[in-house]
Image (cartoon, rainbow, N blue to C red; front, side, top):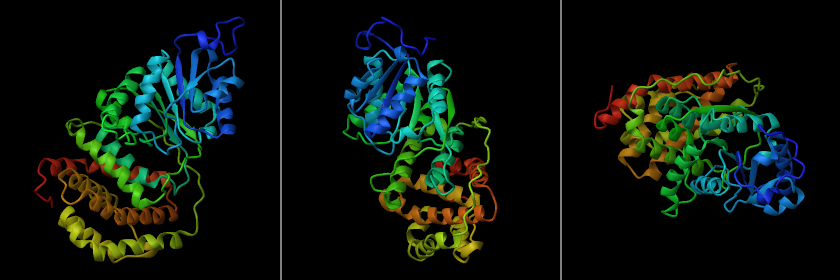
Length: 398
């Protein structure tokens, strides 16, 4: 490995060819950009790194670094198909042997996390390095309720944040994601999401989680649950359908992470916080029976009826009930039982009911991560349910 100190009289950055690591930066504010570049220069040998940024003029302040233009650098809150295609193209152009993609607010990433990301992919020890964030208990709950447990149960991956915005990629992982992204960009669907963990699982590639610690995460342009949940769930449901031949075979998720229960303080405002969620669920129970009855089997509807009779701190949604609800909506999405927009809209009040239940559980003294792990295990236990319903969709299971 080359030393991190600049080599006297070495070839100038613009004359070098090839690099160990290409770092793709999102569009960052000037001060944050300078901070990230300084961390990168400290973490990796400058002569073995190329940094791609929306502001290549910053290179004037760093003559010892190779800084190039990133034509699709954005401040979006998730990585999109166009970014993966662009990343692979830049890697080929610059002869990179590994790629590090850092999302918006990357200045909040610590130096140790950056080093771990780079080492994981440049040492040829992994194909996909994915960040694991330390978030507040009420943050990232769509991920905790739907994205994580589905990815874990169906793709045998314990990656806690399957749609992380900080990734390390090997050349073959970058190529696979670029091919997947090209299918969308060729249809001018450049903003579509990809699911790197699922792609790696299907390809049999290695996955490593990197402890990113506390990180400032970007917010969607439209931070509205009515937009976010259908967008994310719909994209994941479509990807699961496309990879059905893979996940229907039996697999067991490896233990990838020694989970440390977080010490976030419990809040005392649970009752006020969940009140509008429960109100939305109870209203939906009255108004959405016709739609839910097209999607959910009788036993699940009976479970919801019991839930509708509870309120406040006593409200608890059984983990197995939530797992089956998500699986039933996944199947209905595949079968186009009803308009997909209406379908995913009908999932929202059920998700709010799960959130209310989760907050009640946490308020009772259970660590947030422990409850999420218990719930994810329920998705694994209930996998035979979705397998049966997927293969025989016209038969409601008892």
